[in-house]
Length: 97
Image (cartoon, rainbow, N blue to C red; front, side, top):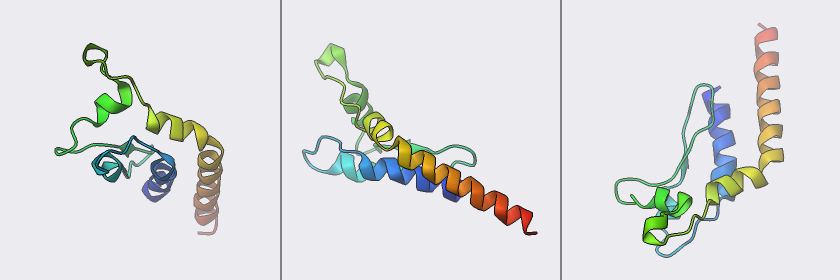
């Protein structure tokens, strides 16, 4: 199941279009391997501004640019299709044992 969740996360990562100035934010995006959920992350110690870009920071005049949320919404059909395919593969694998 973790591999399936990683595949689903990668669909969103590959579709995301963050603002690119240096390319570090885009390079920091990755999918995790959750047991029961797909996890998509952006930012690292050297890219601490990822949440501020995605969610915005009104006090600093930074508007939200929800590039991950938009990617997930745009790829919803592909995400659902991969989830259905993966669950089918898991069920078929268990029924053959």
